[in-house]
Picture 1 (cartoon, rainbow, N blue to C red):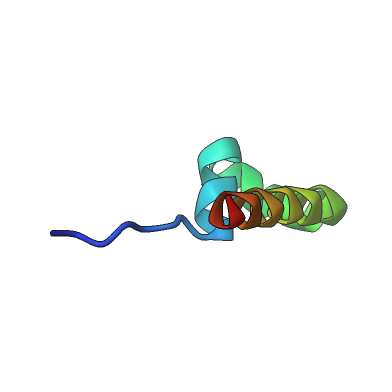
Picture 2: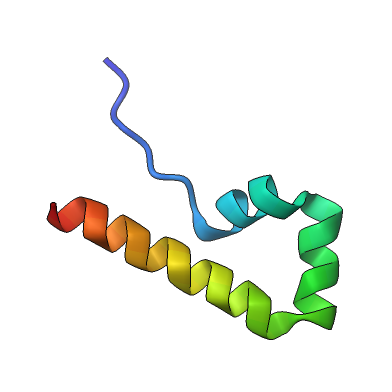
Length: 50
């Protein structure tokens, strides 16, 4: 049996924007990257707390 996995922040953002897009956003739009990571963190926290 494989334990459940939770995708990391970078992996999820990369899925949404592509690797090149995410790398460019880190330099050009760091606030947006921060918001994406914050959103995903809150979403995971909400899921964990039911």
